[in-house]
Length: 482
Ligand code: SAH
Image 1 (tube, protein in one colour):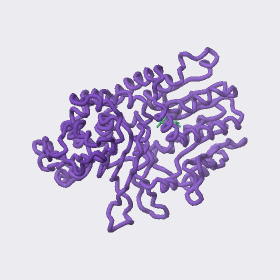
Image 2 (cartoon, protein in one colour):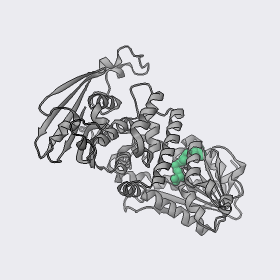
Image 3 (tube, protein in one colour):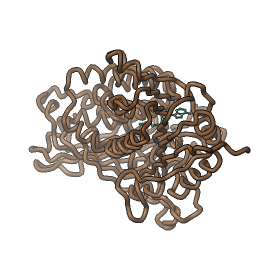
Image 4 (cartoon, protein in one colour):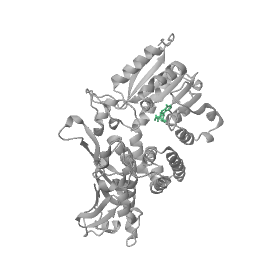
């Protein structure tokens, strides 16, 4: 596994000072799982490149460890020697410890100067596809170039692999770049080789610092970094949230970060604008936002005088806490505060609190539900809550071809892998036809009618990135018997 870091800062050989590794030497370091080597394939005043090569010994890794009962050979035959994983982060922190901390005793001014830097990770395993790579690195101010790799050159029909060559460029402190790599490499891979305990939480908060608190994907980052340990993850989010509030108050978010963030959110915002438009047009005065997440649509709904009663529901308490904070519910004037309520609940269960509303929004939620349980959701919403208008959106799977790493196998019966979905938490993604078939079945069963609208730029061949169904309850409609 290879990482290269280059600079064209003048004189470029300063990189040797910053990394605390002499450009003329080839140095090796013993680690518990193999050896790391540092060397410089090019050194001049104009350009300097340092390499960190990690030589993982897969046999050494399994000594004294419990065996995986499912696939015993997997201990020896695995991708760890070839990819950037949590092992790589460990190597980075051991070999470049001082640089990672931002220290350079001989040239302190250098450590405090942002330099034009380029890092290339030769092979990064990414769960979540190319889109996820961009969503993670771009808000940090990097230009991101990605080369996807097919599973096997000989068999292109097998499609893409989860492996990418990633090049990041930006003007950064070297310590920033190293820290981003240290924290984020294991996040892409989503599989750590070591036990995740309290100290990992501290490491994340320590190294993540303010950039993580402002990152639009901080939840995913924390969840994956802490390897889905919910208790640690909740603590991390709570503490990051506090940090973010402080940063917001200081008003110190870099403009560049904001711009990139807006770019990455534009589809999201367009989707909410489209949903809001439909809710307004429905004439509804009371509205539910089901699976409201952090409350972005709720914020828009609150601004509209037409809506007199607004309820946001989500299954995640933590998300609701964030929504509560974001919407500053405790600071709203009484009249505003009276009209909105956040409730904790699941769309899987019939819930009396959802009855009696004129409209409901279900924005990018159904794809998070397990397909076998979709039937429960259908009844909860269309049979029991039964609002007059339902505005529902979900990704259009066909559009994934527009993101090269999410090559959809259109027209084939090949199984869809979660690697091909936009978010690792998606349980399915539908083509336009699949969504429309589902929606039409619903309308017949529960006495609704539906029309479909695109969300985002429509591509002639594959349609829009996201799709919306607007359901209206028919006057005489009655749910059909099973
Ligand atoms: N509608 C929001 C959030 C979309 S993300 C937006 O457009 O920004 C999906 C949301 O659905 C998450 O907040 C998740 O917690 C929620 N969710 C997932 N399963 C759910 C369930 N069974 N009941 C209610 N909410 C659920």
